[in-house]
Length: 389
Ligand SMILES: Cc1ncc(COP(=O)(O)O)c(C=O)c1O
Image 1 (spheres, helix red, strand yellow):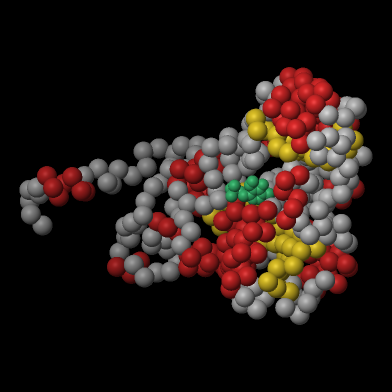
Image 2 (cartoon, protein in one colour):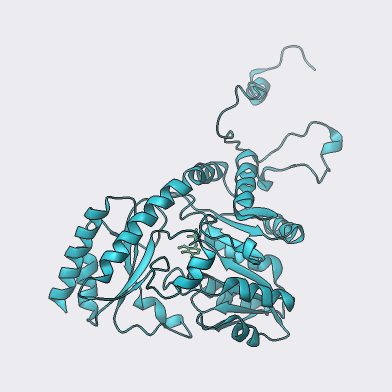
């Protein structure tokens, strides 16, 4: 080694070995593609992280926390919630397999099954969310490899008897996968109810601030966890250290935020029930709502998402309602601190078993605002609906 290295060399190596200055509450945001190994033997040691795409400090901390929360053998991260759904499917399916999916599944997951899996010789059939476990299992064929569930349906709030379906599927060697974004790993723990893979869009409640994308897939046993890990590595999904850090930070306040979403949503649901133009409230945590019995048995909380069916009226009146909202933003997402609303009917066309509502349906996400202000906003919107009907 030369005694006096040139600026060009020193600028590459200087300051690189600072080490951790102090133990902070949160893990360091460790950014890195290249990982410098301690010695030659480590270079080809598959037990070590040898390349940053496998995830570094914040990723490891987030995966451990999510696996712990969901009671899982392992958790893997994906660049979005949709990528976690599609990635988990790619990890376990092969050509010739068939998927049975609940008809209320998140529409982009359905699009992936219909448009992408089909190109690889994997077919998908859809079942009515109202079917019981025996009826769902009666729909399987010898090719059925996996059942996709989503309870409650995140648009229309149908509940499925997940433990019964998971147990019956397991007895036939069929895997179950659930989109658990509604339950956020806190209010619902599908793996403890027998499901094999629990996926959630961390983009929603875990992130909680509507500013970053990420998804996670949690596996029930070690072999399945390894299958997911292999798929992530083989396909090349990678997530940024900043996003992993953001999600981990969000996770710390998840129970506190969800408790307030819950309190606000239940108050709004109660209030909606007595509004003249609201003929049905779709909110599993509400005692009169469809699916409440299963929700009460399996879930520990209601989040901020709910729907309501209006008395019949034209699309112009639905638009008048949405356009009159000031605090509720018009947007397709949910899980952030803000209130949002959409009309849902345009999304029912793709369904094999569309819901039979007698009027237009609105989905709202109840945010962390003062609930009386939110009621006032909705009252103005409902008055606009009544005026335009
Ligand atoms: C139920 C559900 N699953 C998955 C996703 C996908 O999440 P992402 O937007 O992070 O891809 C969403 C997003 O709206 C969702 O509502």
